[in-house]
Structures are given as C-alpha cells and as structure tokens.
Length: 121
Image (cartoon, rainbow, N blue to C red):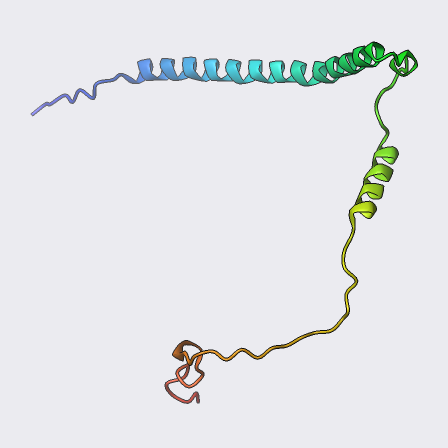
C-alpha cells in the first residue's frame, strides 16, 4: 500500500522564506546599530552646542569661546571625593555592644533532641 503523506509544506519553500527572514533580520539589526552610532556620536556635539548658546545668552562669552567644555577625570574625581566627604555625617560610635536576652516560647523546630533518632556508630 503506497500512501503519500502531505505535510502541508514543501522544504524548498520553507528554506526560501527562512533565508528572506534572516536577511531582513540582519538588515534591521545592522541599520539599528548604524542609527545608534550616529545618535551617540552627535548627541554630545549637540549638547555642547546648546551649552555654548546658553552661555552666550547669559553674557558669558569668554566661557562659550573655550575650546573644551569637558571636565577632566581628575577634576571629576576631586569633586566627587569632596561631595562624599562633605556628606559623610555619621554618629561617632561608642563601641559598646549591648546584648539583650529575649525570652521566646519553646519551639520544637530548634530543639536538639529531635535531630538524631539513633546514636551514630
């Protein structure tokens, strides 16, 4: 008895669709990466331009004419350390340890007598 099973799809058609889906997916990811590259590259330049325009509007043309408006890493570290030390307002510890005994109701869960049923050899 010769029965032909029809599975509803042909392998070459599915393979062609898979190739198309893969190509569209790769193009989408690549174009998204290119767009993100340009956004991150030109965002800092746009922000520097906005800062320069705001400084000019406020009448601080000598600061707007400075070539590099960025703060160096050493200056950032010094500022952050000063802020940290300024806000470090802790109480002086007395180094006294207080131990209070709290009475609790009996619980068999922490009892040692229920942990071993037989003595070990």
